Length: 71
Image 1 (spheres, rainbow, N blue to C red):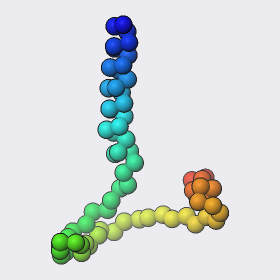
Image 2 (image 1 turned 135 degrees about the vertical axis):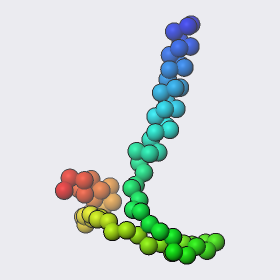
Image 3 (image 1 turned 45 degrees about the horizontal axis):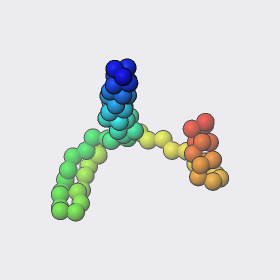
Image 4 (image 1 turned 30 degrees about the vertical axis):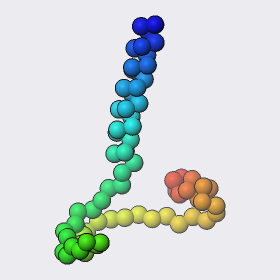
């Protein structure tokens, strides 16, 4: 009985920790920017220089995503 209580508590704590930190793991890095003009619905931003990489693949979406990671 006590074992089940601690097991359930441990499982919940691990789940909460994983759930909390998983959002940061999936986040994309965003380049630095300065807001030039701000309106209610949009912002005009000036970004610093940054480097991006893209890959073009062919095929169905799921297959193409897998191919893109293997390049």
